[in-house]
Image 1: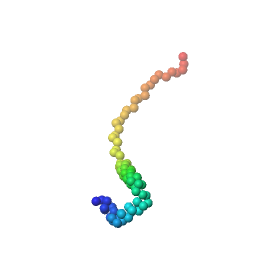
Image 2: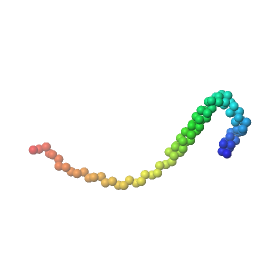
Image 3: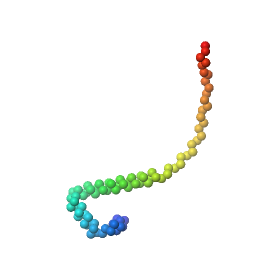
Image 4: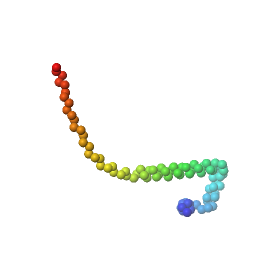
Length: 85
């Protein structure tokens, strides 16, 4: 159903699609068309995946939980040698 809506948006009917298919057969031959269709399908799949990943990356990350206050250890005083004997 959506494919007919998309084709209708471009003004393509059944006669136009048949003409396009015949031109593709003449240009690429019958043996090359399955490989061509597979490549187009993979490209569309990769594009959808990349656009989905980008949309997820644009969402703001949840705010991190407030860090617990950490006490720093106090420095210990060590006896220092004065250098005299």
